[in-house]
Length: 282
Ligand SMILES: NC(=O)c1ccc[n+]([C@@H]2O[C@H](COP(=O)([O-])OP(=O)(O)OC[C@H]3O[C@@H](n4cnc5c(N)ncnc54)[C@H](OP(=O)(O)O)[C@@H]3O)[C@@H](O)[C@H]2O)c1
Image (tube, rainbow, N blue to C red; front, side, top):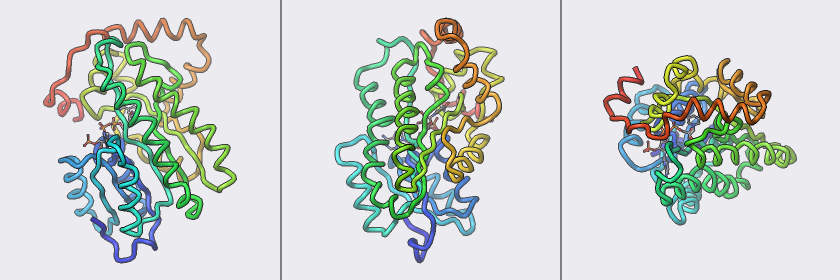
């Protein structure tokens, strides 16, 4: 769905996973700044809800496309759809991703594979496909990493690894893309309450959690400002900056032992129910 008589006249931001959680907050912040938003996310109720939400915002210019980004040929489908709709994004926010926690062997290989595909492969694939357009629109890319990229979390090893990939990949790409006048920024949030897995991690952190946990709307303005200014690494919020700094200065062995202690409850953390998640968001 496109709500704009002349889409080519607006500055479009494509947000993957923009139907829920942090992606939704980033999309809404873009709308507040009068940017036009393209949401690409799974075709389900979350996508319907964000469509309804955006339809209710006066002047909001947006388009949505429902697709499972890890399915074979998905990026080609997105590109064909953009072409048919005459949508040429100036900004690309590679946000879609997910994590799993607990003992390494307690998550299935299939889930790890999907996680690595969505968190890393889809990001590279979409950037590769959109590069010719971005070279012309000369905008920016915001890639979703995590503060865990510098604070490797035991019991969340594969997820932490995917986010370390995003951080290094983005920093390296940034240097290359400056010759195309395309900025590459990387967002490294701390824990944010969005879904059941996030809440499970927050519970595993115990009392420490209440000092560092944020909500998606808290970090979105700093994230989008950072992207528009072409900042390299965005650690949203004071405490996340402190966490990232500590991650850089504390010797590795001490850091990992402390993290293992904090997250040891995560080894056997119980699944979180939908009601508990809704209560935590309030
Ligand atoms: N939450 C945190 O504490 C935290 C911290 C640091 C970084 N991050 C990162 O921030 C990003 C967003 O996380 P979040 O917590 O906001 O997650 P979320 O609430 O679960 O939202 C993820 C979004 O991605 C979409 N999505 C999931 N799988 C997809 C697929 N295969 N194809 C297309 N879209 C897909 C989801 O659609 P549905 O809603 O339909 O499932 C949703 O819109 C992730 O990359 C995550 O790793 C999160």
